Length: 160
Image 1 (cartoon, rainbow, N blue to C red):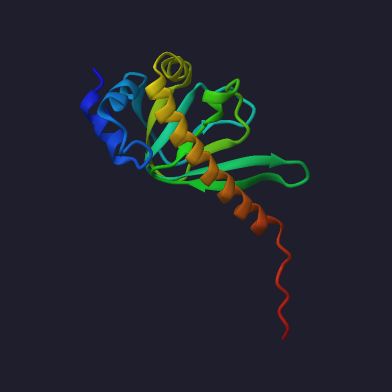
Image 2: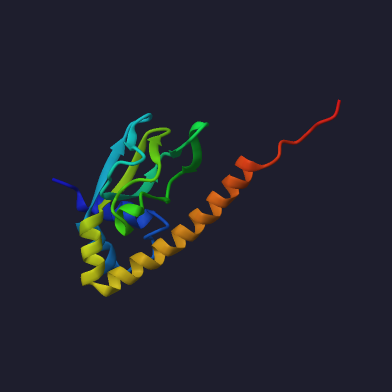
């Protein structure tokens, strides 16, 4: 039996859901579960389907993308409070990166099809969730831009 109180507590501890109304947290808990991944585990591979959106509770995850001529490139690392696999909710569930647990990881896994149905059926939940998701995606976009600046920056030349 899943401990729904532990799930609600985990959601409340995340910045993503900390100030959500109690009713919204209750509804989100109905489509969620706590999951653990040991260090080194692949949560999903680039190009495969994944039907879960994750909110990271503890641990870190590396996001890698295959780049022709360069192989796998780490494009971003995520930590507690961050969202993983948002495209499972918005798209067809095909992952654009591979995600690997860098250390032991605990996350709230939300079943994307059920979450999408919930957001469509209950507009308060949908508005609250999608507003937070938009904010999280804006932060991710900024972090990715900064990572790309580092990736393509001209190497500093030092003189001897």
